[in-house]
Length: 162
Image (cartoon, rainbow, N blue to C red; front, side, top):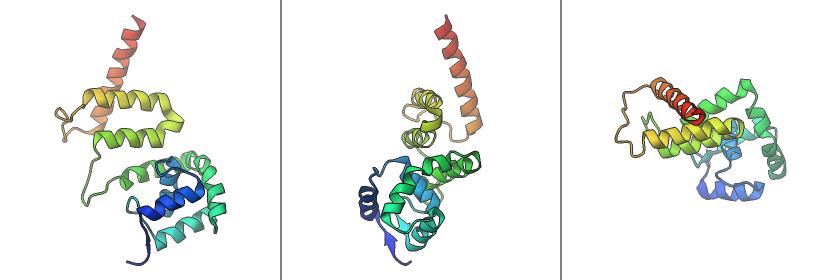
């Protein structure tokens, strides 16, 4: 399998570049590396990421991480990052969905900086609608969940206006 950076190494990297391991920039770094396994970077992924970022020292990486948000927020990059973020969170083989707690955290992390009011209300909706997942239908499509969210937002707006 080759050399690999393990979670302890990721934490040391975070300390060296001055970001928390939960900072969205670490997810962006994983995206640039096209890392497959959460919490790990293979030697090949590391080289691919550093080459893509055009950095060769920790100091340069630290500077580059600070402006990575601008790159991700470009429309031509955002969709790829967004899709990567969700694939990256599928940690089990053949896993097709992410639990509500994790999805709320991920939505906030990925969309929060650009769409914070929408993320906050969608997170609230998910917590109210599926508090313990007893009423969650695994056959229900996400489009239906989103349709229900829009209806919920409309009802909430009507109540606020009354």
